[in-house]
Image (cartoon, rainbow, N blue to C red; front, top):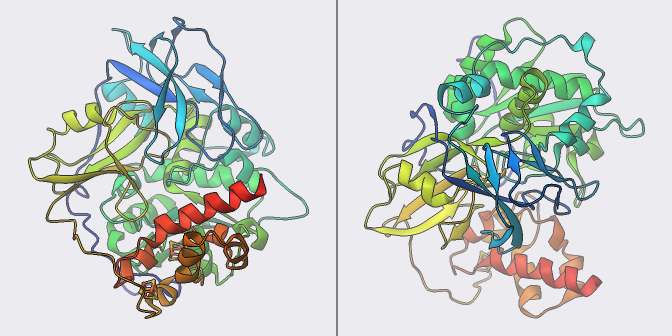
Length: 450
Ligand code: SF4
Ligand code: SF4
């Protein structure tokens, strides 16, 4: 593929914050040594919590199921290390939710660690014969394997893979944008295991019946475009290069940019015949089919000016943040904030015993120099939040409605449609915490329905 003159695609509005990828984008993926203990949360996905299916002090092997799915929109969870379970605990996740965890004390013998794990995760042969795979079996298998969206939203993937004759899927978009500043896990995966992503994409298209597969990558990752183009060869899979803009990787922004289709407010890409899947999710799907691996590990970017040695690591789900940070040499003296995820959509953490979950794409360590402290003032009605919202919402109205607990206004201005991308707050000259207020508005609306 000739990369030089490829067209660039994008959506209207959005922002371009500093990318800050250089801390970790050249760090090859490593495997975190097996931690002494993991604490696996029973709610790591959108939907109902999982239900414990093993007893305390049970011996488990890596990959064993330890909790069943709690409903249709839910996912089971699996042991990420071999060892012995302990009594369940409770932990507060960075998003404020209190969840039950299953601790597992790791045993001496670990069948899946180090080079063995890296080879199973990234390497080897990813060729696939779709004629031997029943497409309707993939959604069920995906549900059993506990696979959820790895881009951060953690939506159970089996729901996306279900065929529905009334809503046929025409297009599968594989999302390699990774537009969130600092994060580089997807970038490294595209460089180091493009064939696993392609195998997952073919499986997802096989399951959904999508005729077209398009891989979308931002132009700040042209080496990844090249790696995937080389892996595709003459197969019928397209690559589209997207402008580097935030939130280019948001599902609705991506569908508009890549296909020119508008997802209706409050709707899903499926409403316009599209399924969007993150590159990490596609790779997990391939591991499930070709390596019989449920979702037990994920790639985490550990980055920022406040971490001694930034890295991209394969980490067992449930590993404490502290263990991951220690492996990266610890934090520096001038650290101001540690974020689960990236700075735009992530959550600040104060307790480093919180575990890595299926949705933890990164740990970003910011210094005092990174955080601009400015006072909040009254809204100056500049309209910049409206001009920047990629979903055409009116953030200032939503924030005001949340302050005044005006449920009718929250409904009228579609509070639930907000994807909490943070563009409005980033642009606001009055430093109004628009996203926090909108989150509060969503909670108020939900409570009013009860
Ligand atoms: S209102 Fe929501 S979707 Fe719109 S810019 Fe603000 S956070 Fe993003
Ligand atoms: S950007 Fe801030 S100051 Fe401007 S209208 Fe929106 S809320 Fe008000």
